[in-house]
Amino acid sequence: MVLAAAVFTACEPDSPEVSNDNLKIKLTSKSIMSFGIDGGEGTITYDFEDLGEATRSKKKFPTPEAATAVDWITDLTVHATSLEVTFNVAANEGGSREATIKVWSGNYNFMVMVRQEGVISADKTFTATHLGGTYYGKLQSRGYDYFMILSDMQPMSIGAVPYGATEYRIDLYAERGAQFDAKRRIPVGVYKLDHRRSGEPGSIDGYADCSYLYDYSGDNPNNIPFLDATVTVSEDSIIADITLMNNEVHRVEYYGDCVMEDYTEPTFADISPVSQYTSDIEFNVTGGELMPIYRGNWYDSDSDVWFVHMIEQRNGFSGVYLLFDFLVPRSNGGFDNKDGFVGEYSLLDPEAESWDYTFPAGCLRDDSLQLHAWYAYCTNGQVDMSLAAPIKTGSVKVEKDGDNYVVTVDGKDDNGNDIKGTFRGIVNSFDNQAMD
Image (cartoon, rainbow, N blue to C red; front, side):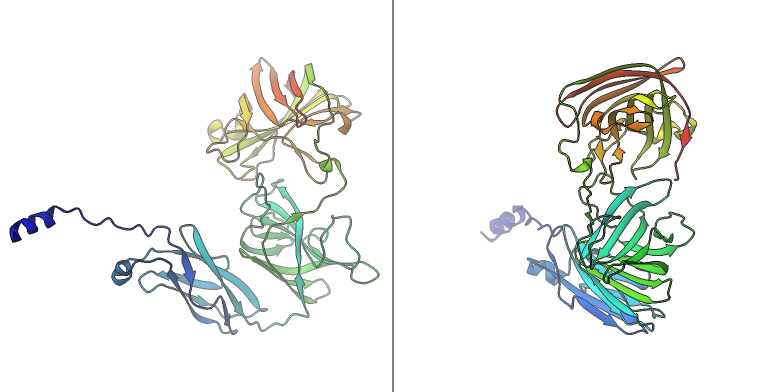
């Protein structure tokens, strides 16, 4: 019987291992850590919920990741067996500063705020309650342009500031774009004022009309540009240390979700639907002209962009006007391949794995700039917005026929009307705005 029991035990399957890949990680030390001007070492402790005793005794813990956006927090190291994250804070020769350390494992994370004293004290500390602005994308720059407004009142627009408001307007360029994101989140990172206006990622446009303090707290508005500025964006805060042209040092603090509340103006962007048509649109253009512009990796994707706009009558710039952003494979040859935009295109799905041979749907920015895919009509060089419609769905085919290009559109506007037709014309000129 003893032998039988031994044989039976040997044949039993091993106990299945419990997966620890997505246990909830939690902070067990302080969420705010403070350091003096000399800096020092810091230790963050954490634990996992629902961790089995067998796993805990064997110290087979999941290994989380840790990151910070600033260079003055160094040697960030995860110690999985002791459930610790260690780091060093460098000595500070400037103003007080703050940053966050994010620790995550699977779908769960926590953040720790690191604060450090400074040797330079600010003349004024300002706490912003609103984050507004707009996203301009990539316009002849290497970085993606976020024009943000840190204010103590809801921002209205560039041209209108609420009476009594104080606004710090900062035009920064980031490594990542948000072209098709529903929320325009300011990318985590450190940004520094650049009077050369390079448009490089990590820079702030130093031009007086782009980054400045707009103070309407008194009877008369006061506009003061920046002499110097460093902006640190974390997951849940924006800290700006700014020196104004009058040599005042301001520290601006914002705590909350770093998503810009896009200001709006009473433009066509407020009309729903945007299309001004109540019936189908048909067109057949011959003898038109196309103006393709190669923009390279415009949308921070694996596809290149050709912006192609076309007009029925180049002389006087009138008649049917079409514009598209065509996304093509980067292997097409870029600007050297002048026929690189020839192909068949479907509507872009931003979640798709590949954006090749697609076009994004037309939309209207809050300053009434038409983007992506539009049918319109021009008179005397002006787009007639009463005869304009965004192309929201469908397909576009671009073919080469001798010296002519033939663009066939089969789509619909946001009012459900068909937009169908053919545009035949020659290329007037090629342009290259790529900056990658």
